[in-house]
Length: 376
Length: 214
Image (tube, rainbow over all chains, first blue to last red; front, side, top):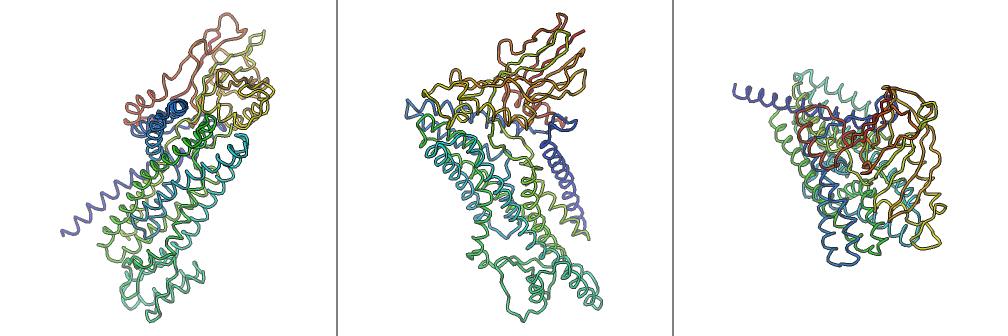
């Protein structure tokens, strides 16, 4: 009785959160899609809802960003202005990452899709932000400083890098979807099977598994299934396979072994996320660097860019930690449910993987608006 | 199957959390002080808009990167011609950030003409004419200058930002401008957005000119 009402309350809470969340995300996706083509059709202005907090973040960003050019000019004559510049850049980085950006969405989704720790989330956030800063410094350092190319040429290079980055995100997402899809469908069929009665269960289980195997006919999956069924087999550990458990208590969520997490393969996977997100430099950083170069203060611009990256990393790390914590809360909630736990967890991972793919594809095809490259 | 529903709920929540940051618009990276002229033919039809856009310090420096000049720091109109070409070519993608309506009906622009850049007071100034595809006569026309994605912040120049050239004498003009980008964001942000009313984000920063010709 007690359990029941708890369950009902919990379900109601989840549903109400879900309703709000769904409204926000549908609204957001629609607006992002429409915003891409504001000049065609009858919709000249995308009406975007901006909350007070985001409005405030935007105002702060603008303020810090505008202060940068005057500070760099001042630094020409007054060396101490460089410290002001670094302070402004740091603040700008923090606020900038709190605003729009696909980077943190990709990293957070990746963390949710995999059994990642908050610690690794933080490391990945810092690595990708610093990679981003490095790319900006290298582009301007080589392009503008060494080769003295025009802004148009640099912008062309940025666009190529941008497309490469989006392509990488999409490919990365596709791989995650492929891997996590297997886990999800395995968990789903296992859960269905455990719901059935004992005698018919065997038959249904076999049928479901067969069906699933046909849908997902990758060699790795068939192989995984073999492991799944016969515990006598040694646990065959692909670097990417997190089996959801052994069939003697089907449906329970088993995280990967800690050894799997810390393994070198794990970091390699993380590196792919860093690369996919980090290769695309921030438009603001490029502008600041070129401006600093023209004032003969390239080093100050480079320092500002890295400090900006540091600020960005802090915000992204906070969001990533939030994502990881949300997942562990979900895991705890799911653990209390018989049978469904594995389905929920694997489903969540599958959906997060799907989100990475959607983001990558959306960015690539222009359905998701990203920060524009300054090309005019 | 309630566990499945429960799972889907959590998933959607996660997705919303992750997608939400993407929804917000960018903050401006480029600032433009705009002055524009509405050009009328002798018979009273509007033929086009002549824009004069002055870019901010940082963007001007960025755009001038790598452009060779005879005299250091001096850029002639000829030396800037390729950049002006790039400007108008790229602006096409954004509809030249100009949106016109005649008696409520959207008007299209042709390719820009008479475009050139000058370098004045450490800033680039872009001049160009946007001819209307079909010149029109209307009781009321509206011209808005803004970037819906707010990557570029447009502000009308302080003094005489809009001029009517050869307009019929009876025409009157009204200008609406956003006071200051950040101030508007703050004011509108708190008052308008939290109560759930729809608001046009880019349009919040729009500069709007209305001309009435009875």
